[in-house]
Length: 257
Ligand SMILES: NC(=O)c1ccc[n+]([C@@H]2O[C@H](COP(=O)([O-])OP(=O)(O)OC[C@H]3O[C@@H](n4cnc5c(N)ncnc54)[C@H](O)[C@@H]3O)[C@@H](O)[C@H]2O)c1
Ligand SMILES: O=C(O)C1=N[C@H](C(=O)O)CCC1
Image 1 (cartoon, helix red, strand yellow):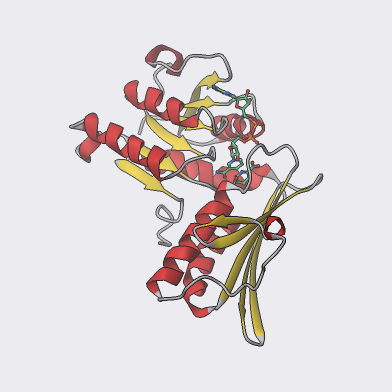
Image 2 (cartoon, helix red, strand yellow):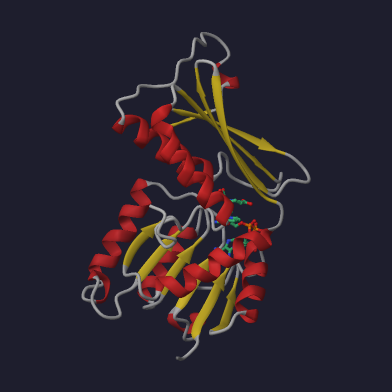
């Protein structure tokens, strides 16, 4: 088996640095390019990569993915900021790259994961399963204060999954008598309230709160160190080369969906 050649975009950042080190240390992977702000993304700069991993910023990640696909390279994306429209444009781009983009031999894959941490992926999965049984549901995400976006991609993904499960179960919105002070009630993500905490000392944490009359379920996960994301990143790199099309969420690779 030949090594999977990997390029990292955002290589100088917190996650990019860890990813480069993890790829260099991993069996069967070879780091061939480190790109960061100001570097063009092209067949040349990707330097023969099979897979490009993007840990940049929400404002550039979609353009990076399109450039990576145009270079004939698979993409693994950890950067936040994706929505239904940007994901649909990636799906359309993959289809345009037919026959490589339509699932045939050698077709390109894009794997976007809001969170590569096993504890986070499991927390989201458990939350989606629990959601239909509770009248109330809210999400609290807690992160380091250098994070540029709120609420976190993980919290958005979690809230969306809770909302889908509630809708399928015929549940309406959570009960809430608030008349004044809506600014204190967090963001509305698909009808689920999401609260974002930024605190020095934190890395990435999430609590999903469910309530019924007389009972509560709290699902909590903590990433204390960015090392926690690396097994998931390596799994995504190894998986995307044989997963044509767009995959959103590591739960699909882990067979949890
Ligand atoms: N999916 C996950 O498990 C996971 C985990 C942690 C962080 N994240 C997300 O990953 C992203 C990066 O997080 P971080 O903490 O590493 O941020 P960071 O600010 O430390 O790193 C971002 C890097 O991207 C670079 N960059 C900016 N514009 C660029 C461009 N046009 N081309 C190439 N590089 C560019 C910056 O110079 C910087 O080095 C964020 O969206 C964050 O939410 C995801
Ligand atoms: O540190 C960050 O920034 C993180 N971003 C992701 C998110 O927004 O969900 C994943 C956790 C860490």
